[in-house]
Amino acid sequence: MMNNEKNNHVIRDLDNGGFVLVLNNGAEIDGQAEAMLQALHSRSTGGIKSHLKILEEKGAEDFMEKFYVGYGHKSIGDCGSATVFVEGISMLAAKAIQDWRLYSGQEASTRYVDFSKQKFLDPTGKEEGKEVLENWRKFYLKAQEPVRKHLKKQFPKGKEEDINIYEKAIKARAFDITRSFLPAGATTNVAWRMNFRQFADELMLLRHHPLKEVRDIAEKTEEALKEMYPSSFGHERFAHTEEYNKKWMRDKYYYKNESAGDFELIYDNVDRKMLSEYGEVLKSRPMKTELPAAIGECGTVAFEFLLDFGSFRDFQRHRAIVQRMPLLVMIHGFNEWYLDALPENLREKAEKFIKEQERKIEKIDASETDKQYFMAMGYRVPCRFSGDLKALVYLTELRSTRFVHPTLVEQILKMINNMKELFEKDGLVFHLDEEPNRFDVRRGEQDIIEKHKS
Image (cartoon, rainbow, N blue to C red; front, side):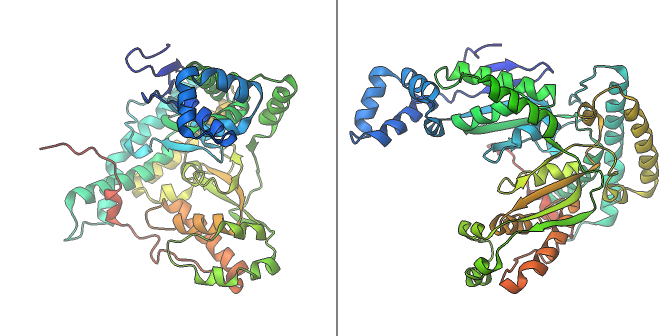
């Protein structure tokens, strides 16, 4: 497909049936023109009014093609931005797109997707793979009602609680449990907004991603961006750079650690003498306030823990830390929390079902990267990451509340205890949820709905 005739959005169909759409917001001054104006503003004292006149007379195309793409002034690309919508892609592809520290955007929540109809991607296209994927779907759908009934027994509605909010909270908790049986090949939607420079830099790597699906997304996205902004994309590709990126992306992109333990401090590289200069800053920080970025000069700390892929999807949102992308495998086991959350008779069926699925997945003729599509999101992966104190404190306080998935909270609480041992004597304080594991009906209020006029 080419331009959408009505709105001039640029669309490219993906090989797996989804699509990429670059948004045309209808502005008279688009991303290219805005980038040109900012670039001129940095090199001339003529003022914005004179620059607008140049834009009106000459347009932005020649300027961007010459100075940004042609001369390689990459900072000009920081001044223009684009919004891309990618639909019908796997959970794996969504994580690949979001594995960029300057990514901005949103991904569809598994709580708001009808998985009775949602497409599951099979990179092999064979009957064995389709059977595994459909088995996960059937179990996920059949588990919904018994899990909701079980939750209502565990968490009966309070007298003062609104019935509609309570029902939503129960439903959300049920989805949080049963999502563990969804395969990583289940499709989702991603909104993706960055500046021109970041799109070009990330796509330069994604076109060499180990997954064919992601490589297709990268190529189609670049094509669509080039059509929408012809003078700002289409950079020259250098053979030595392409070969270098191809080699390390294919060989080293996915992180594997078969001996990973439940939780481990990898290193503490924080300079305590330098940190002492921030003693009062650490002690006096009020609630809901971040530490200053300058504290990053003191050094970084690295951790690794096992976390189910479903919760890793939430954890990965923290782009102030440096994370490795884990390879989804079955060797680390299915997170027990999900099984413990099921009613007893359903748990027994789930354990047998998981073993059957594992045997079938082992027999699928596919690479270890392609086998990820058939694995459920309840399987644990090793999460290895590092960050400075500002990033780590923000992460721990935000992800240790009752509104966060319990499997992630469990590991974050271990991280908090470890950081207290390391830095409490230096003045570090935490502002934490006193009941992080309590079921809170207000979870049912966390929704985005359109209000209709009566």
